[in-house]
Length: 113
Image (cartoon, rainbow, N blue to C red; front, side):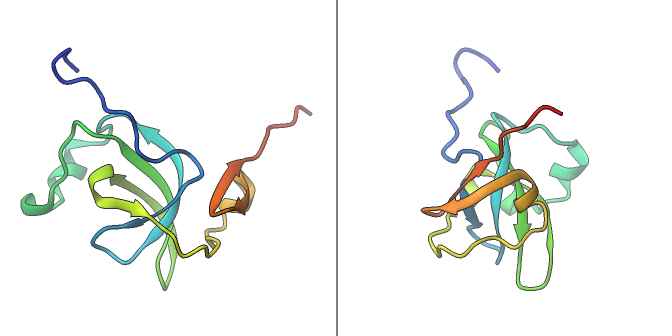
């Protein structure tokens, strides 16, 4: 990162429910990378005409579509807020989060043993 190109502030935060701009899936944000932090192979596997830019936030999602649940890594340019109000059914959501309350999940507090 250079001073002329600082990392942008992430639009979404942990616990937000988002949907993909192109593909039919949605999910809960559980981590944010300020810039691309995955493998070159992963990036190269995306067709060039829709390949995201590296210098933007990337989000780790507990994702779901109509058939399955999974973990996804998605660029900010490809995410929109999910305003359906429907809870996410990913099995890790209740392990990591409380809610949703007003469409947002809150990280569970870690209790010492």
